[in-house]
Length: 346
Image 1 (spheres, rainbow, N blue to C red):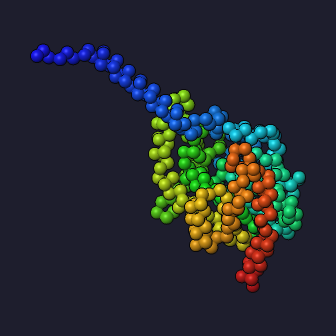
Image 2: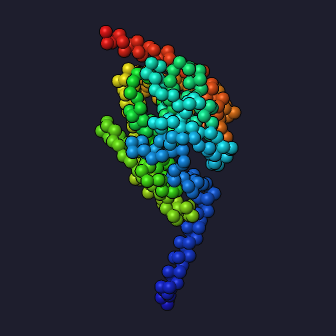
Image 3: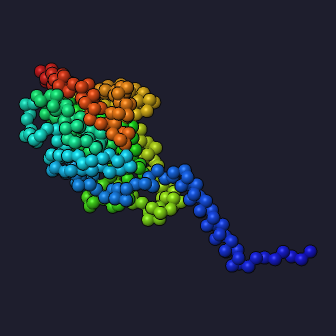
């Protein structure tokens, strides 16, 4: 029997290239049909900053003082321009004019992400503005900022809380990923402005560890080919794996630190449990109870009404903020805290 003919080397190389091309094309098609990755449709300018924000050496970014006409343009098509007024110290306006600080008035401070800040809403439609209107005898401050999680809210709290106050932090379960610097938090399509960064924490041996990222820029090829996006995605997942795995422990530790900061100023701290799954809500209720941290569980039927959300299906509309404002009694809480502080000092 004559020996089998060995194909020429050039033929083998060509065959392998054809097989590789067909394989990559098939993988590209499968990923396309499966809608992977979910960040493929990110705005090409994502991460490049916005006029209503400015870099901050402590927080990464904060609200820039001034008046801005903002159009939130994303896949949900939020719609027409809105008036955004920011005051000093990274606050969004809670009344027509920025008042001087009045220590004689009860202080009410709100911290959190774009839900508190008022994404997609004009000034008067935000929750802190409505609370200020309901309680003119108090002084209300809105320290919410887009993309903040528990960690940045905690940093802002340490910077801004100087006296007894009623302090609210609105918590959504996706803050866990932001706290841990997950890929969804640090991935950018465009380099951020100089000085802007993404702070995050890890959790090791029972202690929080702090870190920062200047933003993980998406690879050029990953913007064109989904197979390259797959490689980019898993590279970033591996880099952040350890801290993302501990995101629940990090978040719980931050909530304890928040409570300690407020209590050290003789204030009253309240967590608003907002958008969580049923299991997450049950877990956090149990944790906050175990730590004797006050919370309001916002698991009302109205919270789930899509008519009370903006077109993106997530951010609260003005009607939902008004519903929540009716269920917050900041003055009773701060007065009870002040009375307790006075009794301790006698």
